[in-house]
Length: 280
Image (cartoon, rainbow, N blue to C red; front, side, top):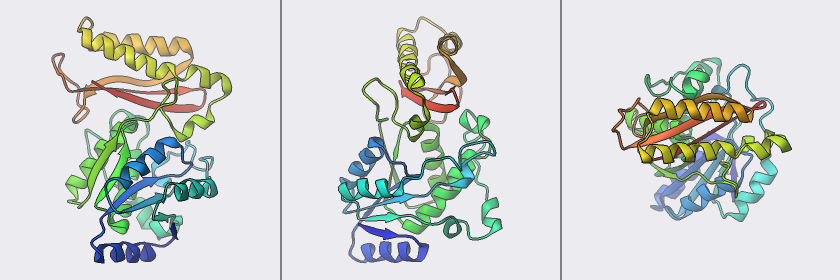
């Protein structure tokens, strides 16, 4: 596995692959890898001859009171996992490679009605930061395909919108959320949970499943389902940010007879913010 740290080196490597007509599958990450990330890598390897993974903890997608400084950096272990997974190249740029001057830190990419709702409303600027860094990474790595997990459902829609709006020649592939045996969605932030919180955390997915079953039964209005779910989570010790039933295509508020739905939840458990979703 090649270790690439600069934009020029990364572009040169991608160009060398292209000259051999070798397609590139790309998995962007912030590191602290877990089995869910490796599932993305394994999917990438079925789609193209060359697989590139990036690790970059992006400061633009963290708010002023969020955990940028505390976010786990586990590069050596991540490298080990990626070598075992037969990744062709790991791109680990420094901050000044992606954002070389103060003005680049001020770049904004927003999609009103999508990037400013749900997590975007709770974390102003978050999805702009995601869109900015993904655009930089796509322009540097020049992948044919990029693979993302569906746990970050709103993020996936933002990235698809980015690709469409900027006419980026990248196909976006998603894979289902990878879960622990008790249903908890795999996440780097699960490591923040105390032992007691970890026992409570699977209720997030259980509540989503209960809401899904209510929707399928068509016995309760959307607003009642959302209210009941918030009450269940609050009683269990969560601090819900939102529990929302939305149209799965654009996250707009759906009519009661809409069939293409996604239920999304974000909630704090102690100091840890967990997100999850389930498609109907």
